[in-house]
Image (tube, rainbow, N blue to C red; front, side):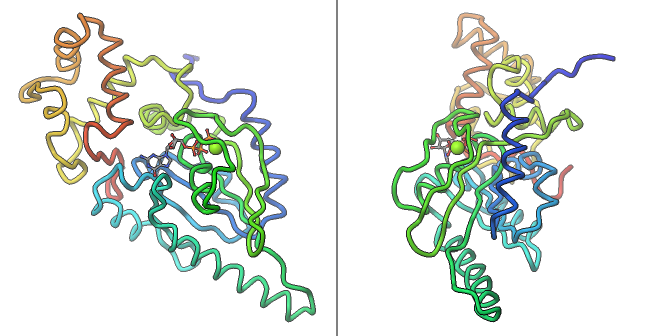
Length: 284
Ligand SMILES: Nc1nc2c(ncn2[C@@H]2O[C@H](COP(=O)(O)OP(=O)(O)OP(=O)(O)O)[C@@H](O)[C@H]2O)c(=O)[nH]1
Ligand SMILES: [Mg+2]
């Protein structure tokens, strides 16, 4: 059998999934954080099976066009699972999230009081793929930096309870990914968005995959539509993604294809190419 092009399951992740599963027995609410650029790929099958109330957060809403964000909310929202768009660095969308948590807390303590028990803090776990912004979201919810947060996958290595003196207790968790590469497109999208550790992929192939995706995306997925051309002053018209990457390498990286691919990835991740939604609700 041919080995898969992207292997994404480091040893610490198997451990993380085991400890996370144990911790999740004790929580009342799970906030599942996904990357708004790739809401379909940035999830884990384990999370669909969880018993506690789920709140779905699509973070990095600043990195996609606003109408696409709204379309995702309409697409994913169900009666028992609110979907909230956030920007964890600036703290946008947080009041809606606080409201959703307060509602769960209220219901929980009503039930406890009916059974003659004292009210207690709501236990909230923040879970999701690596680098989607879980720790940044926790820091914002708390209004101070308690959870380490940095622009690479695998920053948080352990489950960590963070007390929120009062109504909530928050659990920061390591990013988790599915163990098998059943969906190669999801793997590529996670790599493009820096949600898989850099060590496991070929930057040329992933940079090229990003360009291929940009070539196929409908105009509404990009804002501005010509963000790539604006950034590099190089027309995409009549070019294939490969030819574009070669032209970029020749013009900006002394012919080094790897470096030009890395430059495109870096610019995409920083938002310098504009707002780009790699996945849309109606597309596979
Ligand atoms: N543009 C943008 N960047 C964000 C947002 N939220 C977080 N970030 C940045 O994304 C990077 C990753 O954030 P973290 O909070 O470390 O992500 P995490 O999910 O805790 O990652 P792991 O601990 O590795 O699983 C950091 O550099 C954050 O500043 C957002 O809404 N928009
Ligand atoms: Mg973290």
